[in-house]
Image (cartoon, rainbow, N blue to C red; front, side):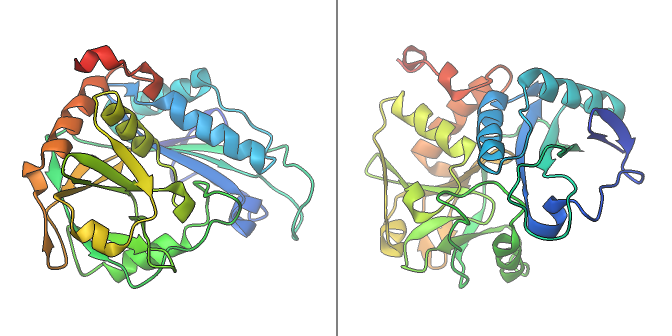
Length: 291
């Protein structure tokens, strides 16, 4: 299998970065994961907008263009022999002296990884479990999709004996936050709810896409600070991320929901599917498509 590293295809067994890379030493790096459907990089512009904003904030001297990203993905998929894939686009700060650095980084490492995926499926479901581990607060003013992933790793180990379940973080104050690898939505009486980014969650690209799909379909969307009881009283619950799309949740603990029978999850999954092979950004959603 090949990866793409700094403009070249490299066999995965030969790829390497320096032990002095500050992405390794201090977590100074960012990544985006997105899905490719038949060679199309879905919502690529939105992912790159978030990535580039984070790189600017961390003063990592790199701006990734759509042309560069699509070119890397195309070469990678051709070399590995598949067209439906998971893509991880990773930018690490690059090498430096040992010790925290105040100067900008000017020689980042860019690596792109891929894994084959089956063609997109119908709506799937997964149970939920409230984690005992709280969601940590962001390192800065807002959460970046960075190399700082220990909170998620420890949470993943908490549910390792519960296959088919997504762990759900609460904040230290007891507010519903997000899943280990997802954002959380629920619906009650036709209104769609999701935790606010004020809880410290990652503002997921699929989260934003689904909210825009809902709003432009005439569905009321509310973001806020919600307690666990608000979640338990929902009619339906679902998770979102860029690889699994929309995943219905039939139960969390002793609380049962509509699961695959959820009207909003089913409706939004159908609308989601209509853009898979063509959308580069959620800005392409048109209200008239849903009239």
